[in-house]
Length: 202
Image (tube, rainbow, N blue to C red; front, side, top):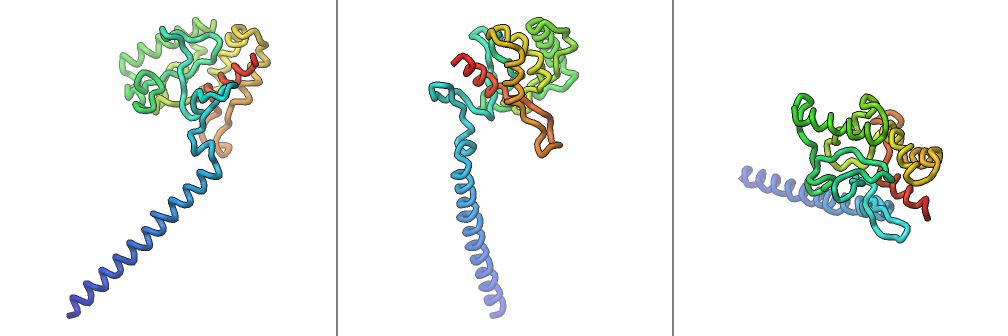
């Protein structure tokens, strides 16, 4: 008889726990997240970016390639860091190259990219920042370092017929500092920056 009573007590505790956690996690958590989404509609909707005509042209959270059909850099745009996600910035295939620093294929790719960027920007290969020649872990990073952005200022300004100062002001406006003042590194959102550059002509 005591065994049956203990079993009933255990079952009652389990049922109560299930009901409490269903309310807290199934209803309460869902309600809180939904309210946060209502309070932050842009973030909840994917941080979408629109051009001057109101058309969605991307997300502030996902990088893009600014190249022509042959893969050559479009000179009027800031260039993103390389991507190893699918054919480039493919959110369905997010990943890094997973190649180690001594991998011959990675070393060759980095060397080739460094030389191409140095030639494009008219600088010494030693001045090309690491993020310009290596992909991020996700392959979707929309950011580059301020150093890589600065390397591209003169080219972009010349191609667009504006002053270096004007382009630098746009770079500064789209540069984010360290999170909480000490986490991570300063970074420039290339997608937002290039969209702002297109807005200069409007």
